[in-house]
Length: 293
Length: 297
Image 1: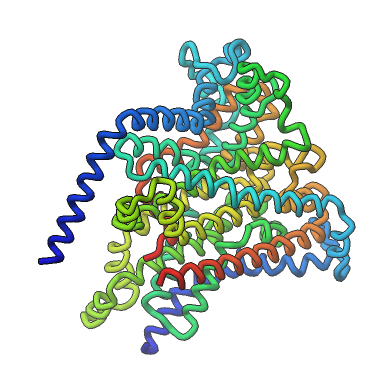
Image 2: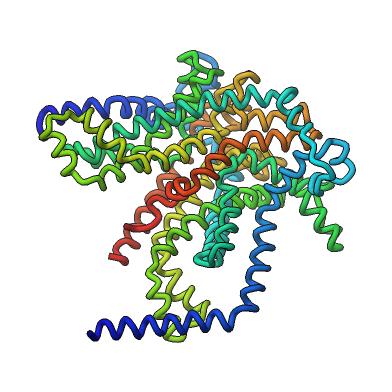
């Protein structure tokens, strides 16, 4: 490295670094600062309240409710898109031209915005003529038909299902790429040794998909923590906060009730949860890497 | 010699396996495709439903419902969404945000990615991790400070705030993909150019950029789709109707057209056309971008 090269490096990095720090890193860290205040969003003056916002969380039932729902969403994110994506990838991998056309149909939700997806699924759950209730009535299960999004026990699950519709497609894409990377001889060898299809999947294919699985699950969990659009369009966290996740709860506290100090404290909690997820992700991918080297 | 035999053996085994499969599985194959078709139809039902609803008049929807096949294809909903629903303004705003933010975020990614892969210095790897870390954190964490910052800068309720946000939040993914791409370009090319008297700017723009077209295509499709589809930032930073992007416009349409399901779905189709076009024409790059890093090697 000569001095001129250093100078070029500094010149090239100046702008990206400045923009990234000013609009991502600094605001992210500033949330810690605001979490110690009682700022209301527009007043110039505000007070330092120490850890009062964090103490408030322990007695706030809406907060523990949002944490619980975020946890439910995370667990669903690990199971539904991963299982569905794997199944679809196995079914569609190397099945010829027909399957390739079908693949594109499965890709489609990835290109759609979650705001659009929320809009579409509102009509699937619509009480009177929605797709689910219409189907239930047609097959004689009329008494099961109900206002899905108006029921506290169903609203969250209904939104998670809509979200999973897209996330499953994303998982499938990653699993398909993972399948392409598996040497065909290994699967054929198992076949010749007499392993049936399900044995091949369980003993050969799934273990070899471990690197892809780690990415699929990490992506699903991180996306579940970010999820806001689909919730905003479908329920806004309702009815009675039954579908609030942390992101929605934070939005309501900050931009509906103007408790920006408390909202920042919720953001800090979200930050810490993300940090824990990242730590687990890097540990898992390091383990997988060691296994495959 | 033994190797060839082994190879031939295996080929024979594979061939017999293939013919086995072909003979024994014609009927299961048909069942497989019938089942697959049913799954595909179920999976596509939501998208197909919106398209069908957008082609029916309000009266027809009231009569036969959103999900039925339209009797005649009517485009009145599209006209209404455009004229009464401000679709034209929303779409224009979305383009005003998406195009500059896509181009500039990728340009900054080119600068950072090239420097961190070819002009390595002590601490450059740490700096790379610092850049990429931004990928993992939910943007909600920075919401309140950015809301305040844009208020102080006088950029609240302007498209500038959205452009700046998407440039900044695009830097991690652009840096990640381009750094890895440039790292795979042989260093000898750069050294030869230096001997010929080229400086780093010339190497980057005349040598590296033409080589990196596939990576740029991947990033353009990803960034365009993500920025176009964004919902959170315009909800937070935009207040007036004439500054709304198409996704927020779609969500706010419900009030005025709360039961005009045809107009709502026409708006949903409008909102999705640009990303669907990108997706159809650049699917290869899009998929490559999505699977980036998921497969080892």
